[in-house]
Amino acid sequence: MTSPGGAGRRFVVEADGGSRGNPGPAGYGAVVRDGDTGELLAEAAEYLGRVTNNVAEYRGLIAGLRAAAAIDPSATVEVRMDSKLVVEQMSGRWQVKHPDMKPLAAEARAVFPAGRVQYRWMPRKENKHADRLANEAMDAGQAGRAWAPRAAASRAVPASPASPAVPAAAEPEAETAAPSEQPRITAPAGWAAPADMGRPTTFVLLRHGETALTPQKRFSGSGGDDPALSERGQWQAERAAAAFAARGTIEAVVSSPLRRCRQTAQAVADALSLEVRIEEGLREADFGTFEGLTFAEVKERQPEALDAWLASTRTAPPGGESFVAVSRRVAAARDRLLARYAGRTVLVVSHVTPIKTLVRLALGAPTEALYRMELSAAAVSAVQFYADGNASLRLFNDTSHLR
Image 1 (cartoon, rainbow, N blue to C red):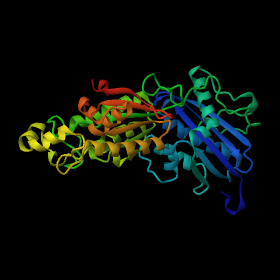
Image 2 (cartoon, rainbow, N blue to C red):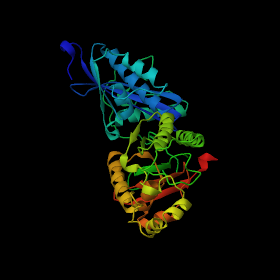
Image 3 (tube, helix red, strand yellow):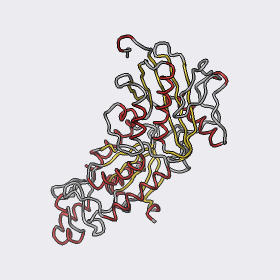
Image 4 (cartoon, rainbow, N blue to C red):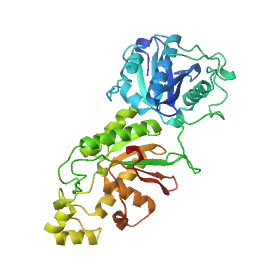
């Protein structure tokens, strides 16, 4: 990236923000480097009180941009962040929908003229410096102190949203985590706790809320109508969203393409200021001619087809999809998600059959195990996957958030 007309310097801004609870005690960190030499020019960090992770990330971005502008307002800037949401929104590829994010995005855009800032996503492990500063600011704030830089960067001072940082004297001696550093989101014990063999990939599995067909126990797969959530189903989705927002460990939201899942996923995503990504492989089984019927109605109208379907997981309902076929599809979707979200905690919003399939695959159980599981509407389950190929079921059919 070069400066238009050769004017101004070239800077790299690395920014990060974190919230221990989402919302919870939060802070940001940002650094400014010379774009040609990599020399550290400024640091900024601040404790923000109780806000969400995304608000903290935007505050880190704004502080970094302001620190760069204080050094040279005619500079061009490359911003590097590990927040896909902020990078995509500020690059104009994703809309800024959340009301808390819109003014922050506008504030960030106002620091430099349009065209002078570019955004690039980078893995979290490469954003150690800004992440460390954010955690130092949170540690200090929770201890009732103002953030202060390390001795090697003693001339750096904290930057509030209205006060940019001043230049730092030198690169800190190390960018490794301080002993007191905590993860970006301090996860409670349970399905988000790190394992000794490295951070696992966690699928938090949420069945969609009820539709009009759910209490009637009618077959509702991907081959029939695409019903919306009922009033109760929407309430269930909102209760789930509130529970996930309070827990604060979800980093991405993925959904089946069917409407009842998309609506459930969107309720959670809105509460967490995340985007919903659609994964086709998470759709419900196609129940063929059973669609829309109750079990009793199928037994009365299609007894031979029902007996054959119940006798073998390789047999599909007429015009539908067998459980073995669903398992192959879901396993492929699982592998895609594991590759895309390695080491992260992902909310997977799907249906009875795909969720049961993910659970039984994690357990190494036969396909017939699908018949031995009960999964309620809007129930939460969780599975962790490790780098060595092993998996662990951490939670199954939890509906405590609906009580």
